Amino acid sequence: MNDSDNNSNDKKAVEPEKAHKPGFSLSEHFEPSPKEKKKIIIIEVIVSFLIVSAMFAAVALTEIYSLKLNWSDYSERMRILCDSFFVSGIMGILSWLLILVARQGGFDMIVYGVRKAFLWTFSSKKHAREALPATFYDYVMEKKGKKYNSLFPMFIVFGTFLAISIVFMFLAL
Image 1 (cartoon, rainbow, N blue to C red):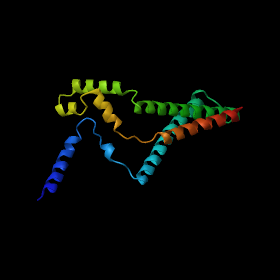
Image 2 (spheres, rainbow, N blue to C red):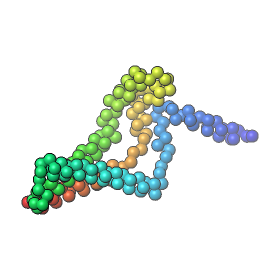
Image 3 (cartoon, one colour):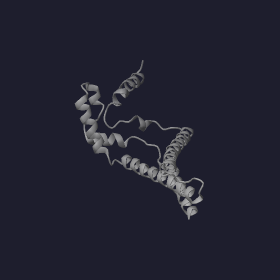
Image 4 (tube, rainbow, N blue to C red):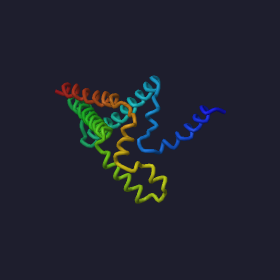
């Protein structure tokens, strides 16, 4: 056995220890293939569409049954569709903006503080306390190392619902 074999075994033994150190992220070393990226984007679009469609249905059914609007009247139907598409599109865009701000680090200090407080208060196990980086700076650096999926597919779905509401607004006139 030569020195190069011995060094390669040492590197393998050190790798799992490195995973628990601040600033290390497994996502730094994992890059999905183009086929996997396409699959992830399709799933994101489908989930975004289902969520915004559920909001659309909730608003439409609320207007029809709570306000007792007449679905057979053309102007009422266009108003219901316009309201439903608009509310679901705006709620989607606002949630997209909230996710964007969170990914940019707008809530990092609050999240770190709350997580640290809960770990120190409710966890008596030492390994649970070590799961969170020791300092806020380490937490931010670790978070910067993570790669996130694009938010663009969500924006397209939510923006489409908002654009459709504008079309129905002009049809209702």
